[in-house]
Image 1 (cartoon, rainbow, N blue to C red):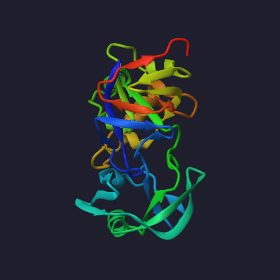
Image 2: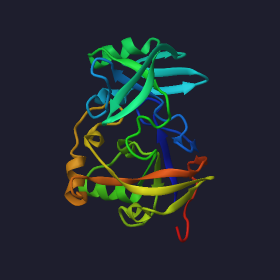
Image 3: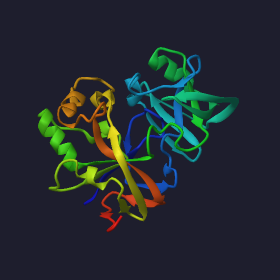
Length: 253
């Protein structure tokens, strides 16, 4: 088994972008979800499921410059705090952040049709729903593709790692719960399954909705009120992970 794809997004809810390698720090992937679009009037972080146009926005953060493609136009500048510190709601959890001045707010407001701002998260992982690392496998993607009778773009699941599991059974990753995995020079502790929502029915580049993948998945994966696909993981040894690195399940873990 080896890593086929690695992905993350600098902007919460923004386009999931692939990369050749990633540094896993104690809190999760370096550079993942450091910024978010926020609704100051409603006091909350915007969610992709409610604002799928966020998926059209590709963000990069290099050498202190935040560059985001918004509405077909690249908007870039160095984010600077405007002194406005916030504690906003994210899925019922209070998250501390600060608003950054710059050209992004006006561009996002135009795209989304409402007044919004851009904020930088004070502590890494603040706008991560569950554990900081997520994993899906090609075996599970193949099963869903067969059930849906269509090809599946793995980016719909916005996972940190897509693992090529060859001929393994679908959802083999469920059996890794509670186990430790070595990936590159990092080590992970696998947790529970990831409950999915309607975001997987949004096209990864445009945000357009036109599939019934969630309903298809529910037909054979519904567990209580959740529809799990893939697994969460925590970092227990930081390190660098690259595409093509082998996955090793530790014995006795």
